[in-house]
Image (cartoon, rainbow, N blue to C red; front, side):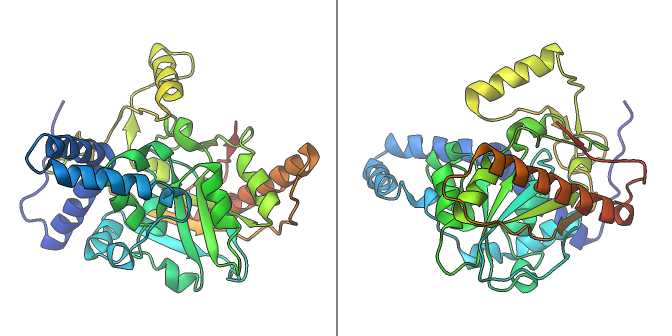
Length: 335
Protein backbone atom coordinates (compact mmCIF):
# COMPACT_ATOMS: atom_id res chain seq x y z
CA UNK A 1 0.00 0.00 0.00
CA UNK A 2 1.36 3.39 -1.01
CA UNK A 3 1.41 5.85 1.87
CA UNK A 4 0.49 9.48 1.16
CA UNK A 5 2.27 11.67 3.70
CA UNK A 6 1.05 15.09 4.78
CA UNK A 7 3.14 17.99 3.46
CA UNK A 8 5.52 19.72 5.85
CA UNK A 9 4.31 23.26 5.12
CA UNK A 10 0.80 22.84 6.58
CA UNK A 11 -0.46 26.08 8.20
CA UNK A 12 -0.48 26.15 12.00
CA UNK A 13 -4.26 26.58 11.99
CA UNK A 14 -4.73 23.20 10.29
CA UNK A 15 -2.27 21.54 12.65
CA UNK A 16 -4.29 22.83 15.59
CA UNK A 17 -7.46 21.49 13.99
CA UNK A 18 -5.86 18.06 13.68
CA UNK A 19 -4.68 18.21 17.31
CA UNK A 20 -8.22 19.06 18.43
CA UNK A 21 -9.60 16.02 16.62
CA UNK A 22 -6.84 13.78 18.00
CA UNK A 23 -7.89 14.63 21.56
CA UNK A 24 -11.56 14.08 20.66
CA UNK A 25 -10.90 10.63 19.18
CA UNK A 26 -8.72 9.80 22.19
CA UNK A 27 -11.57 10.87 24.50
CA UNK A 28 -13.97 8.51 22.74
CA UNK A 29 -11.66 5.53 22.44
CA UNK A 30 -9.30 5.60 25.41
CA UNK A 31 -9.97 8.35 27.95
CA UNK A 32 -12.47 6.27 29.95
CA UNK A 33 -9.96 3.42 30.26
CA UNK A 34 -7.23 5.85 31.30
CA UNK A 35 -9.49 7.41 33.93
CA UNK A 36 -10.38 4.01 35.34
CA UNK A 37 -6.70 2.99 35.44
CA UNK A 38 -5.79 6.27 37.17
CA UNK A 39 -8.46 5.66 39.81
CA UNK A 40 -7.25 2.12 40.48
CA UNK A 41 -3.66 3.34 40.77
CA UNK A 42 -4.81 6.06 43.15
CA UNK A 43 -6.40 3.38 45.34
CA UNK A 44 -3.05 1.57 45.53
CA UNK A 45 -0.98 4.57 46.60
CA UNK A 46 -0.69 6.53 49.82
CA UNK A 47 -3.34 8.83 48.35
CA UNK A 48 -5.95 6.08 48.72
CA UNK A 49 -7.97 8.34 51.03
CA UNK A 50 -8.66 10.66 48.07
CA UNK A 51 -9.93 7.66 46.13
CA UNK A 52 -12.16 6.72 49.05
CA UNK A 53 -13.54 10.26 49.26
CA UNK A 54 -14.21 10.25 45.52
CA UNK A 55 -16.01 6.90 45.87
CA UNK A 56 -18.25 8.54 48.46
CA UNK A 57 -18.85 11.42 46.08
CA UNK A 58 -19.78 8.95 43.32
CA UNK A 59 -22.41 7.43 45.60
CA UNK A 60 -23.88 10.78 46.58
CA UNK A 61 -23.79 11.99 42.97
CA UNK A 62 -25.11 8.78 41.43
CA UNK A 63 -28.40 10.30 40.23
CA UNK A 64 -26.90 13.35 38.51
CA UNK A 65 -26.50 11.71 35.05
CA UNK A 66 -30.24 10.95 35.04
CA UNK A 67 -31.35 14.34 36.38
CA UNK A 68 -29.97 16.72 33.77
CA UNK A 69 -26.25 16.19 34.40
CA UNK A 70 -23.86 18.94 35.37
CA UNK A 71 -22.89 21.04 32.37
CA UNK A 72 -20.17 23.67 32.29
CA UNK A 73 -20.49 26.63 29.96
CA UNK A 74 -16.74 27.13 30.33
CA UNK A 75 -15.95 23.62 29.05
CA UNK A 76 -18.51 23.88 26.24
CA UNK A 77 -16.87 27.14 25.13
CA UNK A 78 -13.25 25.93 25.04
CA UNK A 79 -11.28 27.20 22.03
CA UNK A 80 -10.35 23.60 21.18
CA UNK A 81 -13.94 22.97 20.06
CA UNK A 82 -13.70 25.74 17.46
CA UNK A 83 -10.66 24.02 15.98
CA UNK A 84 -12.56 20.73 16.17
CA UNK A 85 -15.49 22.33 14.26
CA UNK A 86 -13.24 23.77 11.57
CA UNK A 87 -11.42 20.48 10.93
CA UNK A 88 -14.41 19.00 9.06
CA UNK A 89 -16.01 21.68 9.16
CA UNK A 90 -19.25 21.24 11.13
CA UNK A 91 -22.24 23.54 10.64
CA UNK A 92 -25.67 23.66 12.31
CA UNK A 93 -28.58 24.70 10.10
CA UNK A 94 -31.92 25.93 11.45
CA UNK A 95 -35.00 25.58 9.25
CA UNK A 96 -37.54 27.19 11.62
CA UNK A 97 -37.57 28.96 14.96
CA UNK A 98 -38.30 26.78 18.00
CA UNK A 99 -40.40 28.24 20.78
CA UNK A 100 -38.48 27.99 24.08
CA UNK A 101 -41.79 27.59 25.93
CA UNK A 102 -41.84 23.94 24.81
CA UNK A 103 -39.62 20.95 25.50
CA UNK A 104 -38.31 19.06 22.48
CA UNK A 105 -37.05 15.64 21.55
CA UNK A 106 -34.53 15.81 18.70
CA UNK A 107 -34.16 12.57 16.75
CA UNK A 108 -30.58 12.62 15.43
CA UNK A 109 -29.74 10.70 12.23
CA UNK A 110 -27.56 8.98 11.23
CA UNK A 111 -25.58 7.75 14.23
CA UNK A 112 -22.33 7.52 12.27
CA UNK A 113 -19.28 5.91 13.85
CA UNK A 114 -18.52 8.46 16.59
CA UNK A 115 -21.53 10.85 16.38
CA UNK A 116 -19.23 13.74 15.44
CA UNK A 117 -22.06 16.05 14.36
CA UNK A 118 -24.07 15.31 17.48
CA UNK A 119 -21.12 16.07 19.72
CA UNK A 120 -19.93 19.17 17.89
CA UNK A 121 -23.37 20.76 17.68
CA UNK A 122 -24.99 19.77 20.97
CA UNK A 123 -22.09 19.26 23.42
CA UNK A 124 -20.15 22.41 22.53
CA UNK A 125 -21.01 25.97 21.59
CA UNK A 126 -18.67 25.90 18.58
CA UNK A 127 -21.50 25.83 16.03
CA UNK A 128 -23.58 28.43 17.87
CA UNK A 129 -26.51 26.40 19.19
CA UNK A 130 -27.34 28.99 21.85
CA UNK A 131 -27.39 31.75 19.22
CA UNK A 132 -29.50 29.82 16.71
CA UNK A 133 -31.94 28.52 19.32
CA UNK A 134 -32.07 31.05 22.16
CA UNK A 135 -33.70 29.80 25.33
CA UNK A 136 -33.09 26.11 24.56
CA UNK A 137 -30.67 23.83 26.42
CA UNK A 138 -29.56 20.63 24.61
CA UNK A 139 -28.74 17.33 26.31
CA UNK A 140 -27.16 14.56 24.23
CA UNK A 141 -28.09 11.12 25.57
CA UNK A 142 -25.28 8.58 25.99
CA UNK A 143 -25.12 4.95 27.17
CA UNK A 144 -25.43 4.71 31.00
CA UNK A 145 -22.29 2.56 31.24
CA UNK A 146 -19.98 5.53 30.66
CA UNK A 147 -21.36 7.44 33.64
CA UNK A 148 -20.01 4.78 35.98
CA UNK A 149 -16.37 5.46 35.05
CA UNK A 150 -14.58 7.64 37.65
CA UNK A 151 -13.49 11.10 36.49
CA UNK A 152 -14.63 10.40 32.92
CA UNK A 153 -18.28 10.80 33.93
CA UNK A 154 -17.62 14.30 35.26
CA UNK A 155 -15.84 15.30 32.06
CA UNK A 156 -18.58 14.14 29.70
CA UNK A 157 -21.33 15.65 31.85
CA UNK A 158 -19.59 19.02 31.62
CA UNK A 159 -20.37 19.05 27.90
CA UNK A 160 -24.06 18.35 28.39
CA UNK A 161 -24.05 14.57 28.00
CA UNK A 162 -26.56 12.68 30.14
CA UNK A 163 -27.56 9.05 30.57
CA UNK A 164 -29.82 7.50 27.93
CA UNK A 165 -31.97 5.74 30.55
CA UNK A 166 -35.71 6.36 30.21
CA UNK A 167 -35.79 8.18 33.54
CA UNK A 168 -33.13 10.59 32.26
CA UNK A 169 -35.03 11.49 29.10
CA UNK A 170 -38.27 11.76 31.09
CA UNK A 171 -36.62 14.18 33.52
CA UNK A 172 -35.56 16.47 30.66
CA UNK A 173 -38.84 16.33 28.76
CA UNK A 174 -40.98 16.91 31.85
CA UNK A 175 -39.15 20.02 33.05
CA UNK A 176 -41.66 22.82 33.71
CA UNK A 177 -41.46 26.01 31.67
CA UNK A 178 -39.98 24.37 28.57
CA UNK A 179 -36.66 25.21 26.94
CA UNK A 180 -35.09 21.74 27.25
CA UNK A 181 -34.01 19.49 24.39
CA UNK A 182 -33.26 15.76 24.67
CA UNK A 183 -31.11 14.72 21.69
CA UNK A 184 -31.38 11.01 20.88
CA UNK A 185 -29.30 9.18 18.27
CA UNK A 186 -32.27 7.03 17.29
CA UNK A 187 -30.33 4.32 15.46
CA UNK A 188 -28.13 3.75 18.48
CA UNK A 189 -25.00 1.65 18.61
CA UNK A 190 -26.22 -0.99 16.08
CA UNK A 191 -26.53 1.65 13.36
CA UNK A 192 -22.83 2.51 13.71
CA UNK A 193 -22.01 -0.92 12.26
CA UNK A 194 -23.45 0.23 8.92
CA UNK A 195 -21.85 3.69 8.96
CA UNK A 196 -19.68 4.06 5.86
CA UNK A 197 -19.46 6.55 2.97
CA UNK A 198 -22.66 6.67 0.94
CA UNK A 199 -24.76 4.77 3.49
CA UNK A 200 -28.35 6.01 3.85
CA UNK A 201 -29.80 3.12 5.86
CA UNK A 202 -31.38 4.16 9.16
CA UNK A 203 -32.59 1.90 11.96
CA UNK A 204 -35.95 3.53 12.63
CA UNK A 205 -38.78 1.09 11.89
CA UNK A 206 -38.60 -0.70 15.25
CA UNK A 207 -37.39 2.30 17.28
CA UNK A 208 -40.50 3.61 18.98
CA UNK A 209 -39.40 4.18 22.57
CA UNK A 210 -38.58 7.83 21.87
CA UNK A 211 -42.02 8.25 20.29
CA UNK A 212 -43.70 6.94 23.44
CA UNK A 213 -41.62 9.32 25.58
CA UNK A 214 -42.64 12.30 23.45
CA UNK A 215 -46.31 11.34 23.79
CA UNK A 216 -46.14 10.79 27.55
CA UNK A 217 -44.61 14.22 28.15
CA UNK A 218 -46.12 16.18 25.26
CA UNK A 219 -42.66 17.06 23.94
CA UNK A 220 -42.50 18.19 20.33
CA UNK A 221 -40.61 15.84 18.01
CA UNK A 222 -37.94 17.33 15.76
CA UNK A 223 -36.18 15.24 13.07
CA UNK A 224 -32.50 16.11 12.64
CA UNK A 225 -30.37 14.87 9.76
CA UNK A 226 -26.60 15.25 9.79
CA UNK A 227 -25.41 15.26 6.17
CA UNK A 228 -21.85 13.94 5.93
CA UNK A 229 -21.93 11.99 9.20
CA UNK A 230 -21.35 8.67 7.45
CA UNK A 231 -18.58 10.03 5.22
CA UNK A 232 -15.97 10.35 7.99
CA UNK A 233 -14.73 6.75 8.23
CA UNK A 234 -14.41 3.59 6.19
CA UNK A 235 -15.23 0.25 7.78
CA UNK A 236 -14.17 -3.32 7.22
CA UNK A 237 -16.76 -5.14 5.16
CA UNK A 238 -19.32 -6.64 7.55
CA UNK A 239 -22.49 -7.54 5.63
CA UNK A 240 -25.38 -9.04 7.56
CA UNK A 241 -24.75 -12.71 8.23
CA UNK A 242 -20.98 -12.50 7.83
CA UNK A 243 -18.80 -13.96 10.64
CA UNK A 244 -17.55 -10.47 11.54
CA UNK A 245 -21.07 -9.02 11.73
CA UNK A 246 -22.31 -11.94 13.84
CA UNK A 247 -19.43 -11.37 16.26
CA UNK A 248 -20.10 -7.61 16.36
CA UNK A 249 -23.83 -8.17 16.98
CA UNK A 250 -23.07 -10.64 19.76
CA UNK A 251 -20.61 -8.25 21.40
CA UNK A 252 -23.10 -5.40 21.13
CA UNK A 253 -25.82 -7.41 22.85
CA UNK A 254 -23.44 -8.50 25.61
CA UNK A 255 -21.74 -5.15 26.27
CA UNK A 256 -24.26 -2.64 24.99
CA UNK A 257 -21.46 -1.00 22.99
CA UNK A 258 -20.94 -1.51 19.26
CA UNK A 259 -17.42 -2.20 18.00
CA UNK A 260 -17.19 -0.99 14.39
CA UNK A 261 -13.79 -1.74 12.83
CA UNK A 262 -13.29 1.68 11.28
CA UNK A 263 -10.34 3.44 9.72
CA UNK A 264 -9.63 6.65 7.83
CA UNK A 265 -6.42 8.72 8.04
CA UNK A 266 -3.57 9.39 10.43
CA UNK A 267 -1.90 12.46 11.91
CA UNK A 268 1.04 12.69 9.52
CA UNK A 269 -0.28 10.69 6.58
CA UNK A 270 -3.58 10.29 4.75
CA UNK A 271 -3.57 6.54 3.99
CA UNK A 272 -4.61 4.86 7.26
CA UNK A 273 -5.38 5.64 10.88
CA UNK A 274 -8.21 6.41 13.28
CA UNK A 275 -8.70 10.10 12.56
CA UNK A 276 -11.78 11.01 10.50
CA UNK A 277 -11.52 12.32 6.98
CA UNK A 278 -11.88 16.07 6.51
CA UNK A 279 -15.43 15.91 5.19
CA UNK A 280 -18.02 18.63 5.87
CA UNK A 281 -20.89 17.86 8.26
CA UNK A 282 -24.12 19.81 7.84
CA UNK A 283 -26.56 19.10 10.67
CA UNK A 284 -30.04 20.28 9.66
CA UNK A 285 -32.69 20.73 12.37
CA UNK A 286 -36.12 20.16 10.88
CA UNK A 287 -39.62 21.40 11.66
CA UNK A 288 -41.18 20.36 14.96
CA UNK A 289 -44.02 17.85 14.93
CA UNK A 290 -46.68 18.96 17.45
CA UNK A 291 -47.47 16.28 20.04
CA UNK A 292 -50.55 16.09 22.23
CA UNK A 293 -49.62 14.86 25.69
CA UNK A 294 -50.96 11.35 26.25
CA UNK A 295 -49.91 9.94 29.66
CA UNK A 296 -50.79 6.37 28.62
CA UNK A 297 -50.40 6.21 24.83
CA UNK A 298 -51.90 3.25 22.99
CA UNK A 299 -50.09 1.26 20.31
CA UNK A 300 -52.16 3.08 17.72
CA UNK A 301 -51.10 6.47 19.12
CA UNK A 302 -47.44 5.45 19.00
CA UNK A 303 -47.67 3.99 15.49
CA UNK A 304 -49.45 7.06 14.12
CA UNK A 305 -46.88 9.50 15.53
CA UNK A 306 -44.03 7.22 14.44
CA UNK A 307 -45.36 7.33 10.88
CA UNK A 308 -45.58 11.13 11.01
CA UNK A 309 -42.01 11.27 12.29
CA UNK A 310 -40.67 9.10 9.46
CA UNK A 311 -42.52 11.24 6.93
CA UNK A 312 -41.05 14.41 8.48
CA UNK A 313 -37.54 12.92 8.45
CA UNK A 314 -37.92 11.85 4.82
CA UNK A 315 -39.17 15.30 3.83
CA UNK A 316 -36.25 16.96 5.62
CA UNK A 317 -33.77 14.74 3.79
CA UNK A 318 -35.36 15.20 0.38
CA UNK A 319 -35.57 18.98 0.74
CA UNK A 320 -31.90 19.40 1.58
CA UNK A 321 -30.00 16.51 -0.03
CA UNK A 322 -29.16 18.32 -3.27
CA UNK A 323 -27.51 21.16 -1.31
CA UNK A 324 -25.05 18.74 0.27
CA UNK A 325 -23.96 16.63 -2.68
CA UNK A 326 -26.44 13.75 -2.58
CA UNK A 327 -27.82 12.66 -5.95
CA UNK A 328 -31.51 13.05 -6.67
CA UNK A 329 -31.94 9.29 -7.11
CA UNK A 330 -30.65 8.56 -3.60
CA UNK A 331 -33.22 8.10 -0.83
CA UNK A 332 -33.35 7.06 2.81
CA UNK A 333 -33.91 3.40 3.59
CA UNK A 334 -35.59 2.57 6.90
CA UNK A 335 -34.99 -0.82 8.52
